[in-house]
Length: 473
Image (cartoon, rainbow, N blue to C red; front, side, top):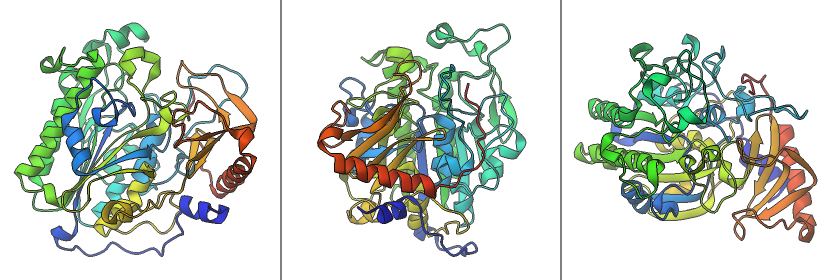
């Protein structure tokens, strides 16, 4: 692939701006459900190789639909990843990133929003919800938001008719006198954490009974689906699990051979099954596209409570594969033919892909970083994504083109990986032969190193940057 082709893959050519299209019959506008888990690793589902965690409902979606094995989050941590998914734009463009420290000072890694944050996803950004609302869709964000909690940044200001859920992560907003640390993470109690459960900005529970939250969020999702069965809808269901601290209901305690973490994943799977059953019961299953994925890799800092990236290297906050390669399941009976897809796709691609599936109009006044995967999903064609950039805050750490990945800077996962290191001769891995990134073959392939270095430089120069909105702590 040439550098010119590469840049074309990464940045959509601006499209002539158009007004919202008139409403078409609902049958021509499939319902869209995006289910996003929090910190679920590439290897945490049985269909992705876990030997003891049982996920029959997600496995069925994967078998009846498409299971993508090289599917990427837009960033290795939460807030930037979610912004990328909802806008189809790299975090550098939206400002949802931090400034990486290179002076050797202590840092926990890439920035996210905190309860003390005064910023959020800029209202000028156009989200999936706004794009689909203009197409006549009912829209709901249920679960974790984490893109700004002040009034100007809440989901209702970003195209969602309904928000029911959490303003940020489930480990934030400690009660007075409670000290953070591993003890409350491994032995959590609801009263340790004071963040609220919200319905359209109104506090309806504080502290949250997190042990029943997965079920209650699914209940709300089912109510939304049933209430909107006669019109097209977009549901963004962002579960706060399995982000630490882990909570599960009494019915799932001790259910999994994989311990507490396995219990949490199996409850999450069962509730995905409940939602899909509701689609079948209401006759909406053949009018709905369901996407299941995770916001980033597993939180390795918490040992067996942090999940697994399977054979991939490292986890959350790193740009090794385990930090950003995540499950990607697409299900749409009668639309998407069953397949295992080993070519690249990314959450950045959901905006243009869903626009293509629904006839929605893409914003034409700004560059997008996603590509339309529709031909691969619907026709079995090759994926339109030929490359992928691995950004961590404001640094391009690595770059993938085809099966080859070059690391220019490496830095490990939160609390468990190696220190930041720059590589004058980039590390090179062939991800089809060596998905675990164990064998650096740069010395044997200097031509590939040179090509990826040039492609990465061209990509870096093509990305305009907004000022960073996140603090690195």
